Image (cartoon, rainbow, N blue to C red; front, side):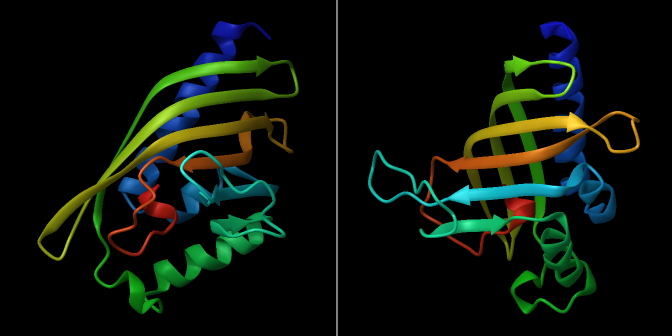
Amino acid sequence: MQNDQALTIGTDILHQQGRMLDEQRWDDWLNLFTDECEYWVPAWTSETRLTQDPDSEVSLIYYDLRSRLADRVWRVGSGQSVANDPMPRTCHFVSNINVDECSDSLIKLFSCFRVDYHVNKKSDAFFGHYHHELTPAADGNGWQISKQKIIMMNDYIPTMMDFYLV
């Protein structure tokens, strides 16, 4: 696979992901992920060091299977999560998308993000870096996210942070 083709595929998926989150299309968003996906937001242990192992160190968010991520999405979508009432309005921005590696079976991407949100008459933002790994979909139709690592650059959390805010 050529680098420019990988960039087009990656850009499309990252832009779809932001739009689906902004529109609260949770099932469509989940369908972007493989069954064996990893979704990880490591914590900072100092100003310069992130946690390295989600199994033995603190993470801001960690799901090691799509089914576990789907459980959280279900709770948010069902209205049974009091922490998500009211739901914030969000606007995801993704930029500086770069292909770090590409082949016919793997695309590794780096990008920058900012998510502006508004809830309870207040607005704020989260920003940082995305690291995505994309693999061909099991059905052979397109690509899916097999890993998403989110590095929060502003790790002061002024409100509850959840998957739709990063």
